Image (tube, rainbow over all chains, first blue to last red; front, top):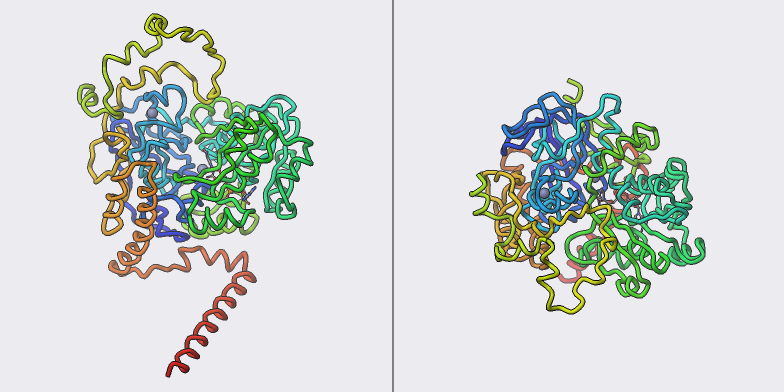
Length: 384
Length: 188
Ligand SMILES: NC(=O)c1ccc[n+]([C@@H]2O[C@H](COP(=O)([O-])OP(=O)(O)OC[C@H]3O[C@@H](n4cnc5c(N)ncnc54)[C@H](O)[C@@H]3O)[C@@H](O)[C@H]2O)c1
Ligand SMILES: [Zn+2]
Ligand SMILES: [Zn+2]
């Protein structure tokens, strides 16, 4: 089959004859992919920042598809079902899954206890091949996959596998009260959705910070928010204090390990890996938020450590919450929001490319060329 | 299947006598009667994990959950030493091979809190990229690095920048070469 193949930092190509996946467990399903996105999280892999990313692996954790085969133990899913597949691999029965922490399953990742299994996301997340291919093995098929309602556009469905739930959970974890001022760092797909969802929780003011004008312009319209380019701001923390009087009630980190804006963090966190990524946005969030405020982190960092002003967290009495989004938990509510026209996720898709152009797709998204916000890969067999 | 699962737990074995009492039943107050004021300020609303975590007490009885059926181990599968065995289900792509594989096996001797674990894995990743090129060549494929890096897209969307970068690269290389050859002359 056709499949994306990772060759090393900044190098990916299309394999034409990767072996098709097989059922390896009674609760497995094999899914034929119809849509598959490239995510900001894939960029951390692509840039060689995630330990135990092996050459030959296929990435892709955001995909929809059609069930081609099911294992003997699968009861709910049938061959032919159209499904959207949450990026988390979750058993549904361990003490974490049973409390709806589907991003923290204990029975889907051998290599690390600190994170649950994720499709196509290095061996640190379980060593599963992902969805940037024609077929994928989907474990625990009765737990994660959700049948796509007939009325739903596939492009909306694929954004329900990660982007929208993650943005929503970012706003949810921020504990927003009606009238709160919310600052979102990052105007990528995740930050855009976080800004949009902040209103659903009753935010009184939503401010987005990034360095790419085309993204800021987009989010300003899409999420009806205020936007600022930090490249033209000398001291973003001071700027936020002045803008809000005392600091925002809530700050959301939707940037993660590849943050720009601070030479020291860039050198130690991205170039030399002395830190587990550059925590510039998180540092601005901690220092900028008001006393007693809340920080919500969905940006992804590596497994070692980061230099953040933890003393200020104590002195200011901050609450910090973060997680991998629990996609399955949020799906019912978000499907309703799409149905009622509250959110229209597919508007963020700027690029629809054939799977065969995966190398270009990665480069365009990584280098932020051609005003790219979100890229969807479509395998040739998507329509057949 | 169940008995087999019991033999290969997904967590460390714990004292079996404890969990029943830890489940938070009415006997808890009795159990801690010797501690003055035990639980008098407990506040069920003080639960910062809501609504992410739908707390149901499974954390207490959690260690006795029934594991899903276990996937047969058909490839070499490394596991964190913070757990006693592999997870019930796991990915089987790209088992460790070659020098990078040896490094990965070594890395998994350290727990997840250790730099030795993660840095060794990062080194293994870089070695693995070189192994990938060698493998390609062995199979008669000369990797098209320009295509793999998506530079065709760069040519399409950022031609000026690309030309500039190439020009800078050529200039720097030429300068370095000139310097080196100059030094060589002096040395002679
Ligand atoms: N927790 C989860 O479940 C989850 C799920 C998906 C993605 N993520 C993570 O969310 C993050 C964002 O993902 P994405 O797809 O939007 O990525 P992206 O790369 O498209 O967007 C990141 C944005 O941050 C901007 N940025 C860089 N430095 C900044 C700074 N100092 N302040 C403000 N903005 C800055 C960049 O210009 C870019 O627009 C990534 O780290 C990704 O791994 C987490
Ligand atoms: Zn994603
Ligand atoms: Zn689980």
